Image (cartoon, rainbow, N blue to C red; front, side, top):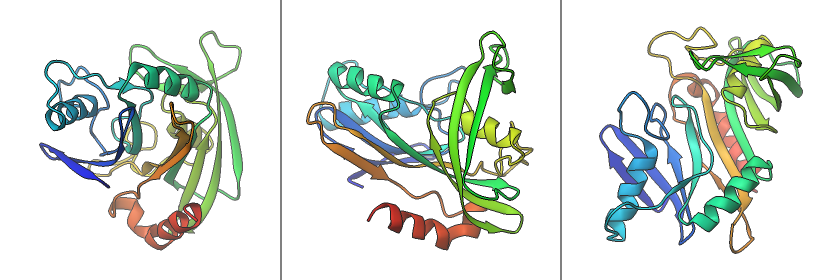
Length: 241
């Protein structure tokens, strides 16, 4: 971490920045960009950070190249130039980056499993559901989920996305019988529970230097994560060596 940006009740850790990139850790429950709630959002917070730090007057450019659901936290990259935004957007669209998530699900994932479904989003409600592949508007969704540990009816899993669909990890796991712990929308999460889904690691090619870069951040030490603290620490040690 090179800096910490505070905005109201949120603290955003800055992992890396240069003339082209800004890599941060999104806190849970902070929207990525402005929405109908009118709440402060990560994009606006980081624009203010860049503007204040480098004394940039007017509207600061910061390109949004990928997203996380509001209740989900973890590593995100923003582009500081239009050239970087175009190249990173193309890389994310082509799934050239490596995104690894950690999740705690209800139930027992027996072993490494590939989930492949067709997903359809309801434009009115924002809800996503699994449908037949031939349903108009359905989008192909593919991910791999790998159990890391099991305890008290829960499974800690590493999730690798191969497509980037809305609510994909949440919907596909729930459809397979393993809803995410604390997911109020798809998993029966109760008030006060924080969804156990975290963007733990992100690797991509630098848009101008063409070097492979990798960033990671551990999930909060609370909620369902507490049950798997040792396994989470071991996962980070293994993936960073």
